[in-house]
Length: 313
Image 1 (cartoon, rainbow, N blue to C red):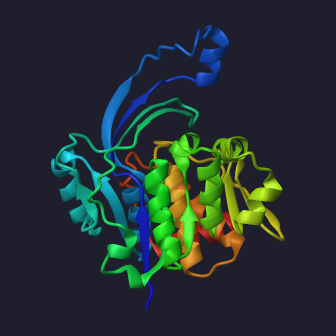
Image 2 (cartoon, rainbow, N blue to C red):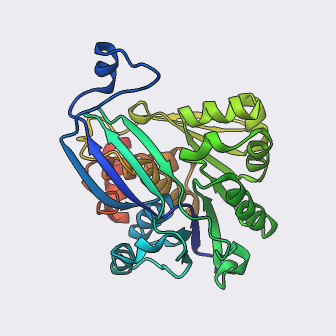
Image 3 (cartoon, rainbow, N blue to C red):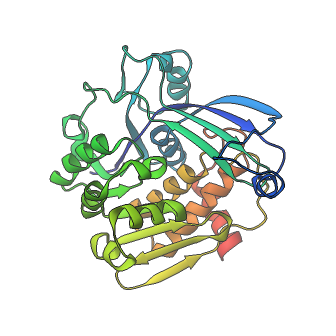
């Protein structure tokens, strides 16, 4: 029985600072010269992240057997490995590169309105890292999620999975700008599902020299997130808009996109209609936004369904 979701992407140790103001207000008050800006931060914290463990964490809470396929630096052994083992996530296929000190890292500054400034280091690209076809569980994989990593690694994994006819959910995320025209077109050609935010979607179109119609001709199902303005879902016949959950108390915005992808992937695995998949994603994102840690929110299938009934009827 195919019941595993394989999640590729970075394993990251994130640094997050809080600016108790608004980036938009800052920009209106101060001249930003050559994008030089200085934000006084009221807090700074270190947290466990990375798209592969983040998405796997959300799916794991919903009873899905989600396995990260990733690379890590030496500092993964300090505390992160024990944390994932305590959660119960399979860490067998997170390859530690002893020649590299640090895992992937996001350096983030958040404002009080849910906006972020992000610097992203993708971490080691380990030549010893497993290819999906080398995994002993590959015959049990029902869906693979290609999370953000450097383009050649992403495409190498994507080609391998496509050759095995494993359905692919593609999420280029923070490294979308690193893909050139040819790489974008190849990535979209092998994708069964595409999830990006509105900025990333505009980059795919510009750098790939593609129109909306051309992207939809390549990818059967395209999901574009717009933060608190909701989600657009496009397939080759229909277009849907799903509202975000209203009036969310924002504690931490980091990882809410990964939580959305976990909810959407849950909907795919369970064969839910497109609108319900996006609703699941929005509820997972809301739950993440209300928790102080990316891998600290708590949810279950029962709670997810109750929240879906409450907010979407």
